[in-house]
Image 1 (tube, helix red, strand yellow):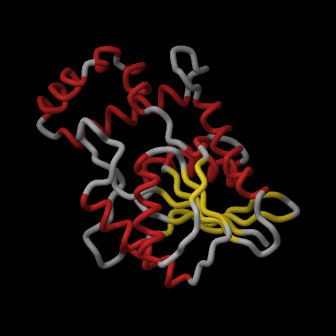
Image 2 (cartoon, rainbow, N blue to C red):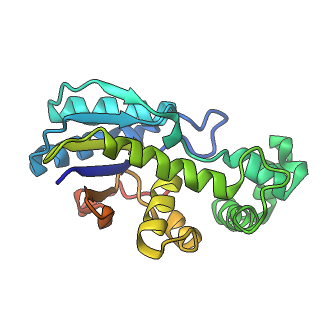
Length: 227
């Protein structure tokens, strides 16, 4: 049956003004991912990526390392939600990046403080009706599922697709396949590992989740990251 491998992008440049590019560690993760794809013996008939730079960079390095010469189609339905807008809706003063950075610095533990603030911001977004947000949580989850289903519709019997996307869309699709709704997203999204692989099959009964957040290719290394 058709199989889709959903891959979260490698580590982006957390804390930098231009988040949407891979960090040096992210580049290493992408190369390790490429070796893992080779070890799995994957020969995709289709490769799709979101429209973000970190998606494209992860795909380019991983596919090159794996020796896979497959064109990468772009589907912006696989893009991550706009985390800046979610944060600003939670605390409008954070529209000024300097205010956010100052608050984080004053905490004494900026990474922990950011995570706590971001968790509260996403919880508010997920529990809202979408008012005040450019994209509602429900709309985000739906377009994530729609993008994966578009990919599935392009696959024939026994064919394989590799999809480079973000943790949010993967968590959205996983929640719907496991629970039938978006209720698990808040628990799944924070634990999605950079370059982790989620396997989904497509059959007569629809999409089926086979595995979630596989990251064995990072075991024994110092490359494991969540942001």
